[in-house]
Length: 210
Image 1 (cartoon, rainbow, N blue to C red):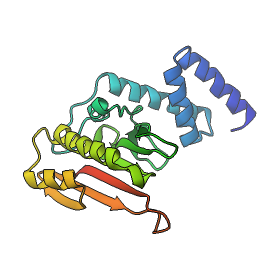
Image 2: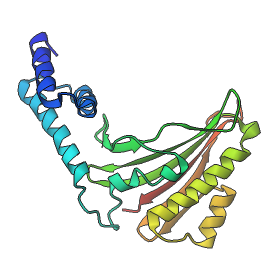
Image 3: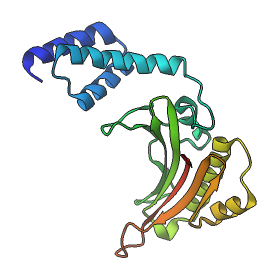
């Protein structure tokens, strides 16, 4: 961005954002993603941020056959202290929100759990829990918590109790993939250390089948 355009962008930020730091942070993130090269493009970035903020204040309804309201789904795991940031567009055009890393256990190398959602601007299509096991010698607590969190997420996502078959698979943390109504439910272990060390990930997903 040249100096004149940068000065224009800063003036527009002062006019539009004022003391609203949330608005300013979102605008800065959008500018980094869009890389506007004209005054018109800069104004369009501001308009895009305003559109998202308006949508958050009055979320459009989402048919359960299509997915979940992102502004509801992002808060599904608050009971497990897995709050996400705002739902926003990424560099590849996807929309997502993700939580911080929640550490589990004690020690230097901690296991951790994250929660994220992804999809379209007004509709989440995927809900994901991920357990990163960095200390496999002390993973019992993390695995138990992950199992509880996965069952809870499935209940929030489907608004119904899981089948006994799925419940047993989740409790045992065994790999599986099942179609259940409009959803595909899966759990997969990924040995990302390739045998050099015993670290691994567990990924639980609830996503729209189509």
